[in-house]
Image (cartoon, rainbow, N blue to C red; front, side):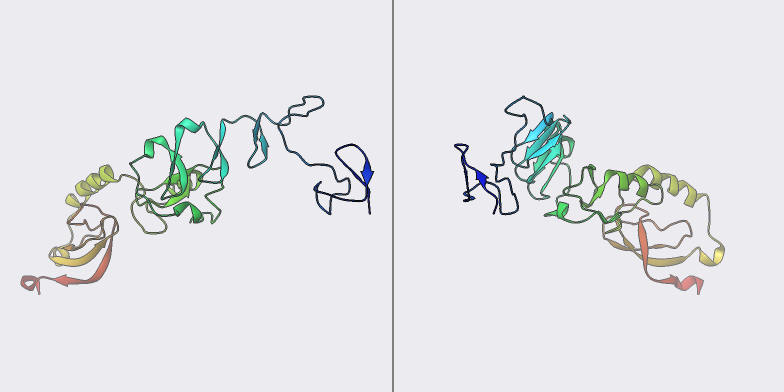
Length: 221
């Protein structure tokens, strides 16, 4: 068994509390930002809790998250229900889902809580990596988990109103109605069928899905 260095510099067979059984030198391990002998800086940022060394990126340690995050700290707050540090502009302005940060990103299936990529909070409260969110918008506009609109679509819905008004359906379809379910307000309504989209009677969103068969009013049968 290798002899170990004690605090007084003597060598002896006992291990005491220095290192572990796999550490042959048996020296006392102490992580710190600078070398005690030559003052060499090991990292511009050092966390004595995480023992993280890094370049200065305005990092800070969040006690509730249990990890270090890229700051600056004053630009973020910790949401206790979501269990994640979020940008200050979301304080009181986002929908909370308990421990939502412990779920993986539904786009890339990678961890969100410990990721260095900023999390984007959707209006529905679900989280995506910001980079995944930006890629998602190239293909669609709905949350991949609940199908709620991932951004404010009001302007586009009004444009769609104009397109629907300018595109009359053939006479055999003009009095056809259909039951729909709205993905934005979760309401159900019966509306006129249109090939371009069916507008929710409750919140005026076109983010809807057909929830039943088409019906023709009696005067058209």
